[in-house]
Image 1 (cartoon, rainbow, N blue to C red):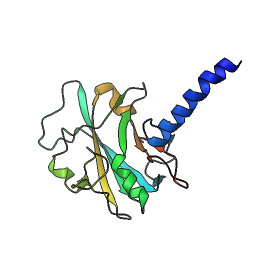
Image 2 (spheres, rainbow, N blue to C red; image 1 turned 180 degrees about the vertical axis):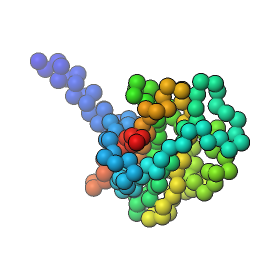
Image 3 (cartoon, rainbow, N blue to C red; image 1 turned 30 degrees about the vertical axis):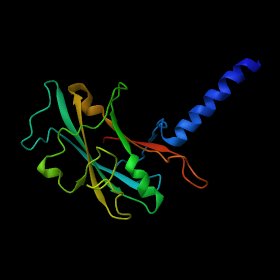
Image 4 (tube, rainbow, N blue to C red; image 1 turned 135 degrees about the vertical axis):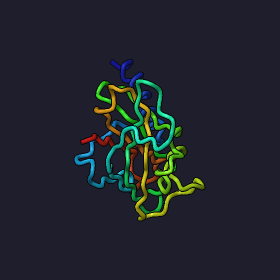
Length: 178
């Protein structure tokens, strides 16, 4: 009986360390109402809606796919919570369990001016943390297959990086489309 514990305990400890450091994304927590502000590691997120194939002069995505934009309102928290946003990660997941990371191929569209680019986390144009308490628009663009568009959910994860005493543990949220 000691052998299973001897093998399991180190694995569990390594998994917990990886979760704490943000190397592994925690299982996402479903958001009750996607259009309600939801706290994630000290900052507030709200899904404002989705747009499909709003290309505004850009070349269309490959045949059999669509461009889906998830539009969020982000309000960075104070102190360390706004700095954590520099490592935020996103993905779109469909009801079959397939997932996609955001694309930057459509980030230069004129209607996206004034929104945060998430190519390198949630930062300003200079890679600096966003101002605390100010509402910011975040648009995540995904190129997904035709059959995924209607069932997409959007996940946001913010690691805490080597948590200190009193730091929140890493969390991940899942916003379902209505």
